[in-house]
Length: 434
Image (cartoon, rainbow, N blue to C red; front, top):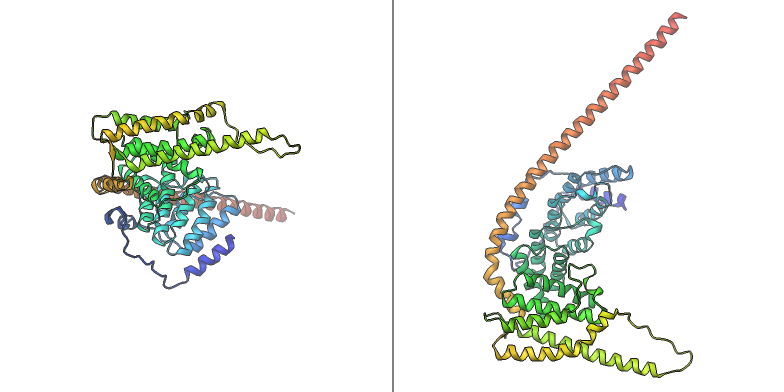
């Protein structure tokens, strides 16, 4: 595989002209200034022949020698075509499984995502992000935002949410801009009415709950918390609480549907203007009814099976649930009754927001995203300067290391030549003595 990659690199290297990627006028949420690559591309680059870099890395890996983070960084920075993106994915994987795997630089990850977007192969960035442990791709907030916005531009909300899921798993909802993009992405994705698997419900619930907690004083935030607890409660009721928090930055405490009702109760008693969106309440109502119907059918089926005593009857597998999970399931009728009561209170107190969750998210983006971008761009400029200084320092250290290695080789060569000369002189003297 490595040999064929080197051949493709050589083939790419002899091309006189490379096709320039075509860009269509698409509109995302982020401003043109935010996604403009001019600042990044304006950094001093180190032009390299990818074929020679590939050959060097292959040779190093075959000899089980380490490849420096600067080498893989140069490879990523010098991508100039879609085909070279494919080749780079291979070397990112190789670097991650090498002795220097922990030293992939933040700017290398940022550059990789930008190159994938630039050459129209965003799926490569998504693949390496989803398999981050295998590739070492752990983006910063700014890079996450660029990738989410790229998906939004294409109306690919499923992929945009896949990025939001990674943001949630890496607990990277620190920037207000990331929170806004996540709200918008989830609202737009849910508006497509996707058929969700249990794993997708869990991811949606976790993302909504965590980002909603950061906006708990707004109608959008409490609606997100309600939806998040609703999705997680559905998973808990069907598969137990262990299926909810395992591998997720979530609490292991049972009772997510109960906490959804607590959100309703809190809003109902709040004297402020906070409201719950009607569609989030409708979603909770649907989940409660679906669970009730499902459990009723399951109970009837179990009663019929227990009444049958035919010999050789194949036993059906039953999902094993802990006693506490079964106790949580038993609370479902109470949850349904309490939900109806609380919804009535919300309606009577004018605490139901007719605006959809998606429109609330869009309104937040229109109102607050510009101000959030400004702070991000200031931080990004400072970060790029730091990256540039760090990269220059690495180049200097690499040069000094090579000079020391060359000096050591030269000294060894001179010592070897001196020993050979002395041996020759001693042999000549011995022959003369004879």
